[in-house]
Image (cartoon, helix red, strand yellow):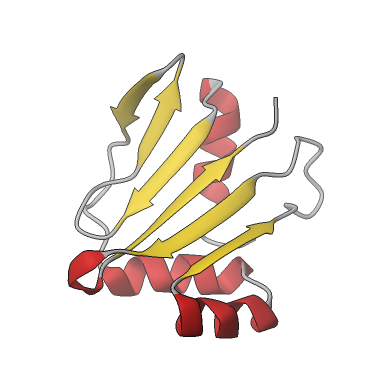
Length: 104
């Protein structure tokens, strides 16, 4: 199980439509239109990179390193919930962010 899967599971349990991961902030879920912080440590750039690279297809990592922007689908092995779509972007000051959204 990938480390990020625990956040996807929480997302599903809470009925969240989005998971927001941003370096320098704790994770957040969008629940019924409101963004709510998860009780978790502030993510470092290394934390975020590690979680995302663990699930990102290798060819997409190369694209991300070159362009700073990717989108990909991710299926959690053995989990029947709808697979999230993940978008990763490099933002100013070298920080990265990720947003995962479950299809409606």
